[in-house]
Length: 419
Image (cartoon, rainbow, N blue to C red; front, top):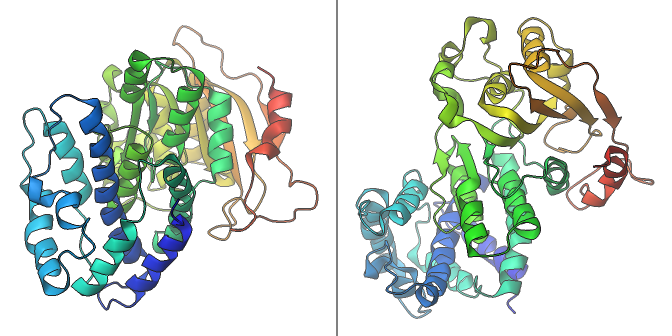
């Protein structure tokens, strides 16, 4: 088995020598498009065995195996010219989006439409490619190890993202999915999906609990939906979905959920389950608030998401949303939003997370709100809310990168919650 963590460290060290790669965001973006093509090629190897007459959406000379896999292959200026003048222009806007391979081609185009090759040195790029080739994504151990490394890459991304956007610790996503328990046919949406943490947890949950055959797997694949407006998290989410067995993740949209007028969302957009940690503390760009009814207008991103989440749930649909204290205790528009939530939904449980869950990125106090959409015929507003304050484990005074929150800590809540 390859030493995946050592390989990642070597790659980052090589990239630091390249004058074109400036800072964490560019290094991660560079890393991700290269890993995407390697992961895609390894997956195509499997599909060629599983499907009769499998056809790649990529022109033959642009497949990873053709230009990257040979360690003695193209390097220096020849490699740089190939990547900049052939690979990127084709993947950005020259793939064939119709016919048998159209959906797969669309996924690749969506990944590359805002991607760039930042590396200036073709020689260093060849060194990085050779390191990436040491990982085999058809090897279960390599794939599993990369999954853990992948989460570290996502955390490294924190220093490169805007205020208000935080990687949700895996322990929190696991607890939320465990309590929401999305069934096989439940449509699951994360309207601010980032790098896909909630969605990958939902896939793992459904697969372990409800998938028994190929037909079930097909239902699972079609039930997962995400929307992300920023290019790099969208690219990471798409790669994450492929690693989790969603071969053609066309349901991960690259757009702004809030950019569509509130009134334009109708019955066909409603879903059974919403699990999300919308950006909070940040402000939307001018004009976005005008997509919402006057009584919900604000530029606070999390509040706009909450207004929309209530609308997007089907009757009896279930949601869990991570929100800051400001939502619970704020006034003005927040009061109207809370009234909407309490009247149209049954807000049954609030779990208060301890300080430091999102450290060192923010010290804002956060809560997870669990609620169910009520049919219009059920008039009474929420009558009572269960409230649980999650303590630090014994001997722990804060969380950090090396000692993050663990899923096992939620055993007390799960026992208290029951079924």
